[in-house]
Image (cartoon, rainbow, N blue to C red; front, side):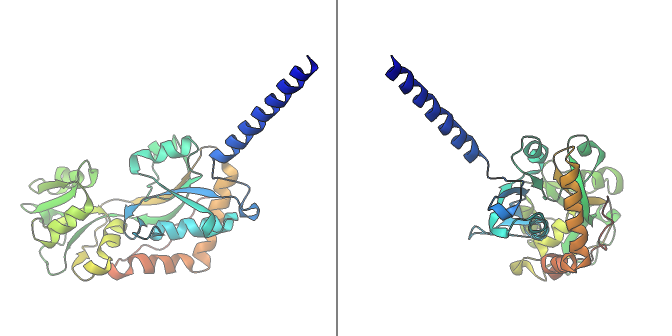
Amino acid sequence: MKLQKASAAAATALVIALTATACGGDSGDDSSGGDGGGKITIGIKFDQPGIGLQKPDGTYAGFDVDVATYVAKELGYDAKNIVWKKAPSAERENLIANGDVKLVAASYTINDERKKKVDFAGPYLLAHQDLLVRADDGSITKAEDLNSKKLCSVTGSTSAQNIHDTLAPKADLQEYAGYSECLTGLENKAVDALTTDDSILAGYAAQPELKGKFKLVGLKLSDEPYGIGLKKGDTELKTKVNDALKKMVSDGSWEKAVKANFGPAGYKNEPAPQIAD
């Protein structure tokens, strides 16, 4: 009888130990910082050159990647301890709310509707809706010039619809599956212009194989302040991220990252925006 009790107790202890080990292995995120070798999971775009791009060799590049890497370092995490997670636009709030990521830096415009669900640090970049046209095309200098021209954006985008509805109602709106398809159409003269945030347009146009083929018109059709999303109510983390962003601006790293990622497209960026406290 005593042997059976002892065996049962040992089995119970083993189950508890295994459960604890399994629970501890579920998360790659350790908010205590990098000193203990922990990791931090950050959501980024995987398919936006100049912003957030997963390269063929498995590494990541772009302005948001540079910003997130800088912030992570200030929080105590080396670059090797960052786990990058794909953060499609429609999933950003869910990734934060579910604890799948600690931060999201993914061309994430701060607005009132999103602030009901998540908190934001920043903003760290002020983008604007703009137009991308062929470098040798001087016929489009304002949105109204798109009347009777072919305007491209991705399916479901509000950017092109806004122009079509309010500024150029006679524009021939073409919706493609992705921005890469729009760029191909623009290069082949199947469309005359592409619209979305100027930072995204600059990122695409700055790709080495496209350098010199396109230009930004330089319109400011909207304000798009990019912020770093984090769990609602985590004021301590928000303060730390804001402090990191302020330091990135003050030590020149922010300007360096802007020029490296957007400069080849002739992107005239706004000065670093005032970071909220």
